[in-house]
Length: 160
Image 1 (tube, rainbow, N blue to C red):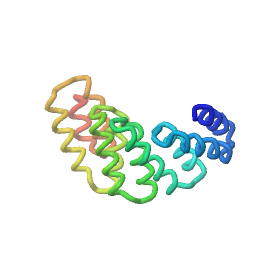
Image 2 (cartoon, one colour):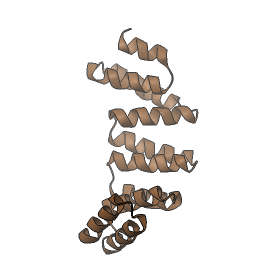
Image 3 (cartoon, rainbow, N blue to C red):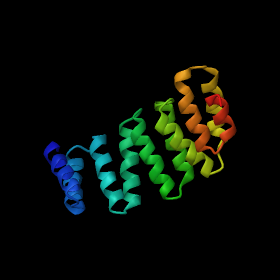
């Protein structure tokens, strides 16, 4: 399985999506509970424009790798790209639970929630984060407010 995975990654880097898919399908068949293999296969499907297959495999990967925020964020993004905002919310919430202070995840989730009219979800988090009064979180909080389009709160936290 590891050799198939390596060969799949090499083919992917060489832009041979069909070869990459073939190798990764074999790797997954040999080790179906390997979340990293499923994640790679999902990325191959996404690159090929096969988003339904990408979603199926990234969600399976995320279920096999609980607590890995990066995989949950990918599942959220693919679901958002497919127009399934309810599933995207589910995966963003899991990603944020796994990595509550991760700046990239918070900013990405804030932009997503703003786009679907669910900004309140992020505002509720920001109240909790601001209550911690940790200066190290201020840049993250500012980024979230900016992603929400809330310049007033961003300036307040920044101290402008």
